[in-house]
Image (cartoon, rainbow, N blue to C red):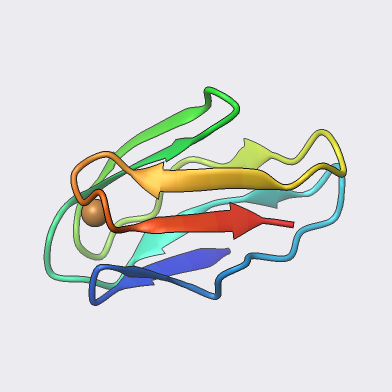
Length: 77
Ligand SMILES: [Cu+2]
């Protein structure tokens, strides 16, 4: 599971095996909206909440970002 705090992703990169799932817990005090660059939209995540899970379906790296804060980017390896 990734975490979001201080408008940054932790850890980054997120290491996840093929077939596992990842979700993001918002430890920040502001809302975030997480989208994977493979098109998976995990939606808005409020402080203290966790996104739904996304399954890692290939070994390729997947970039992700927050649509609200353009500086927030990360990668799943
Ligand atoms: Cu954000």
